Image 1 (cartoon, helix red, strand yellow):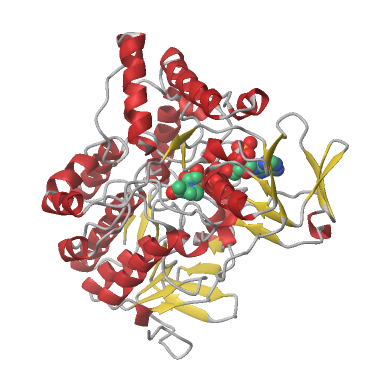
Image 2 (tube, protein in one colour):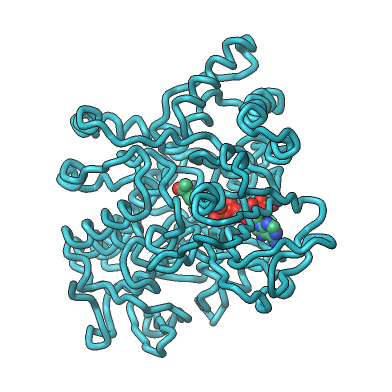
Length: 536
Ligand code: N01
């Protein structure tokens, strides 16, 4: 592996920040345009989220035959996924395979955190500064920094005083952790907690889970991929990918009904049961009105609550695990033996919804007057989603305006792709694009393709500066908010809204108008000569 280093050129055509699935594909496409590119990556390998999130049980919850690149038919035909929902090591191996196959390594500089990115109008260049003080310049800067990449560590009183090790699921030690014989406390019951809790429970002597909000967890039904199933999907990839692209979330789910209220209770429950057995996120596609009809939503919610009551032996624990908020309002979780884990004698659940965690003490977690003893603490407390990774970099555009200040009341970006006052800068799957509400890899590919086309257009037209017009951006932000207001998804506390991070403005960040509508809009903008962008 030969990677970019201090001796590589410092002045290039494009700087890409991040070597996850977005940064890798962006590099590949930029090379195709003949642009000299340097990718700066904080981790020590490619893969982004699939490099950092190495906690026990980490695996994707989108069927991986579809959670994969489609830009290269050879790649999708050659690569064999072994499980319906591959684990982090397998996805990371896939990322490394892509880097090998397309010879990406020489242009990626690892262990390099970007601290600052400054626009200079006179030279029309970005200067990007790393934590080591290195400076690189380029006319274009592309932020492939990820939507869920800035870990959120709540400011628990006394956290530093804890005597044992503290692990964040999003920053897990590469060599793994052995919890054998230990008392472990896990804080957080989102997707990361849901996946890691059953695994930690199998190892630890005692596990105490601190739950602030119960989540809906659908069984994954993970299994090895059968050879004939793989070959059938591979043979039909173009058609299946097209079907996924035409669906609201860019996912391949078995189709459902228009309204849960339009069918009898018996029929509805048959549908729910079949999706519960099928497993995974496809449960969301049972009926189209879960986010527009409270009554429809309640039927799915109650079905799942009853499942929990049927699985969990202790009725009090079952009631604590039964979610109170709308189904799908928070990101739906997919798990393996999640509810079953609470039947183990070494696992206990502490509800902190009404009495919050007071402090972390040297030997445990205090809630009210009780200290729950722990030797190790696991923070499954999620991310400063969508804006965190960008705001943690000091990005300055025209007239030295700071992105952090401009976004103080919430993110504003045109199509979630570019930001007014930040010329020649693009963001991949930024706020205001469907991103986290969709299958991420197709969404990444769509953005990378769009940016590549825009850069090719500029080259062909002899242009060297692009920036969204302020009015077009405001119109798009207003549209994103209007669409969000139509959905009940924006009504409960969730990281989509920023409500998991103290002090973060409450703004529904992703575009909830659906993947096909969004793609059409982006294509129309490009076909009309990039309406809403000004060029020079
Ligand atoms: O983070 P989360 P995550 N005191 O924000 C709790 C993707 N992902 O890392 O809900 C007590 O969902 C917080 O409580 P509450 C996926 O998109 C995918 O689990 O805010 N608790 C919550 O329970 C996912 O949605 C995969 O009340 C506190 C938890 O910490 C997204 O990443 C796997 C607290 C955080 O849950 C984020 O998931 C993993 C406090 N002060 C992640 N602060 C797959 O593909 C926070 N919490 C399967």
